[in-house]
Amino acid sequence: MDSTLPVLYLLILLILLSITSVLVIRQITKTRKTESQLSKLKNKLTKEKGTVDEYYQLASIYLEKKLYVQGVELLQKALRLKDPENLENMAKIYNALGFAYFTQEQYDIAIRQYKEALKIDPNYVIAYNNLGHAYEKKKLTAQALEAYESALKYDSNNDTAKRRAESMKKRLTPS
Figure 1 (tube, rainbow, N blue to C red):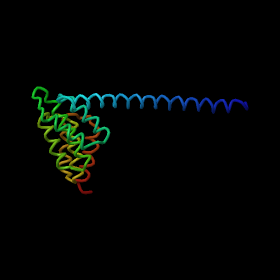
Figure 2: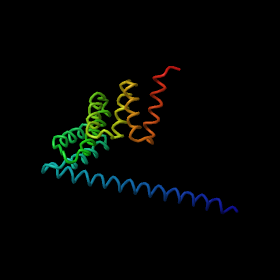
Figure 3: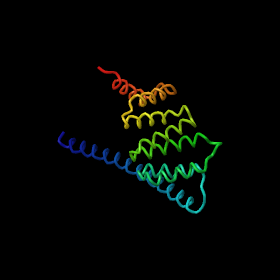
Figure 4: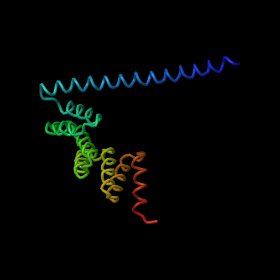
């Protein structure tokens, strides 16, 4: 009975160390993959003109790394290469551009970008959610509610839009 407690502690420690090792290895693998992709895209785009998708991918990596200014530059390059055959990507680019401006607290520019995304793809639910969030930051409750309700019109199961729309309704109706 006396020896089972230390064995149990060692077993728990071993399990915790194993779980931690797996998580660390997964993170290292993910980081190496991202860095490899970043390096390839950077090298390619410095040597030659890239595609809309390549600029978008590189910009997405920069945005993930919180390098918003560089991300904005790349997204703007992607927009200059307009691809009329692939409008869905253009909507994603405008949405990403809106996100980059939003994170820099440039809400008016972000709103303009989200609206551009929605002109291209009127049922782009993520852009409606982002637009609503930007309106919230500007304290434009009615517009935020409208954006969230538009998101719900296209995706009635959207938890973010449901939660935020309820919050906006509470703000608009006095108790």
